[in-house]
Amino acid sequence: MRIFLILVAVLLGVSVVGLVVAGPSALKMMPSFGVSEEPLAVRLATVASRELVETVSAPGELDPEVKVDVSAEVSARVLEVPFREGSTVRKGELIVKLDDRDLQASLSAQMARRDGERFRLRSEQERLASPASQLVNAKSALERQESLFKTGDVSRATLDDAVARVRDIEAQIASAKEGLSVIESSLAAAEADIQRARELLKKTTIFAPIDGQITELNAEPGELVVVGTMNNAGTKILTIADLGSVRLKAKVAESDVARVRAGQAATVRVNAYRKREFQGTVERVALSRGTEQSFGSSSGGAGSGSGGWFKCEVKLQLSDGETLLSGLAANVDIVVDRTQGLLIPSQALMERKLDDLPTTMVDSPLVDKIRKKATVVFRMVEGKAVTTLVKLGASNLADTMVIEGLSADDVIVTGPYRVLERLKDGEAIREETAKDAAEQLAARSSTGSTDG
Image (cartoon, rainbow, N blue to C red; front, side, top):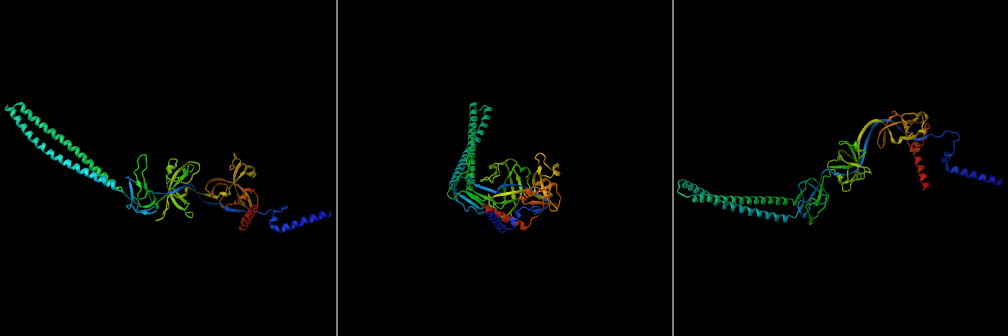
């Protein structure tokens, strides 16, 4: 018996020491034995009529609105590239100089051929003058022979000789004129070849077609650039882009594309500019499902999930002199609708099974009889949580519109989620204070360190 009493005394001593060390937190864990429980600390919000902005989000990448690929129009070696990648150029400035020696030699050869054809033409024209004068004399002689033949002074043979002479000279003249036509055609071809050689010679000097920056440089002095053919692409020497006029090429999911239209406002967030938002406007939406080729990007842009997508172009509004790099990854939120109504935080919405609802609500038309569930919020009325059925409308990531079930100025419970998840109709509640939030944070930290 004595040993038993000693054991009881030891246990009581250990318990007292544990209560002293644990403090008030241990007392909270002890049963209340009929005493009313402390009201649950909850976060509250007041229902108000506000504007709900619905958006469609999509990933994409930036692309200059004006971009020109400068390619070779003649095959030659690069002699000079005055500007480097990243340099700013003005329209009309020399950007590439190609070796033109072969084209200069070709031009000289064509000019020599033309001069030779001109000499031949003059020579043939001079040779034609003699048969022409002979024809005039032959025709005069024929007229005299015809007059003498009529009076019987010459024979038929003499007249026939005069006629044959005229026809022979006319044939010679016709042949000479045909020769002149051939020479004139050859001369015209020589002139055309000279013009073509001059045009090719001009193409060895390439000037900037637009104002912009060189975003890509693919050729250096000494390298050979070639002209593209049907089956082989030509050499792209460099790319010039106007980085002050930028658009976002976005991949809009096919489930959202029906709501996106040209002219809608948009907010663009560029990954490289984390603390800034760019405003923009939708310019065009593709009429057919997109492919990586139609997206027109070397990287293919950001991923758009496993579903299909449509290309959407958003023009960014930049300040004067501001530029953005080509190819930067970005995301866009396109405003597709604005609606005025009663809004509540989406986190306040809870789904309850039919068995967990008050019996007075079971037959409400707001209950989904098929799924045997209902969407509810908890109103705070006289310090109690009141389960309230709601009918929902449009929503975005933060807020949801309530069509039926709530009124303006109603006070609803929005959190914490662990409280909302277990909250029941009629439970006592109070608004969470800063002290409550600090205690919860300390409890979570203590639990985390204990688990560790």
